[in-house]
Length: 110
Image: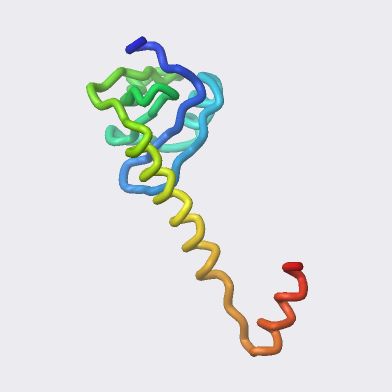
């Protein structure tokens, strides 16, 4: 049903591959209070319906349905980009000063 989000949803921030899981309406409100949302941010519900976020200077954000409905394939692509971005951050942090340090680190992965 357009107009009423089917929870859970995801929050797709404009210009960022990160996705935020929104369990319910309260989680959505809490995330909006914690973040600075922009006009390009989107909420995508469990049916693929997308919504814009309208703050209207109010304490509680309002979700307005958009014409865009995401397919499973499109959501899969968003999730793949999200997971890839997480892996990139982790991979760039893995650096060792010496070969011995690198090998020793493998001992902790088993």
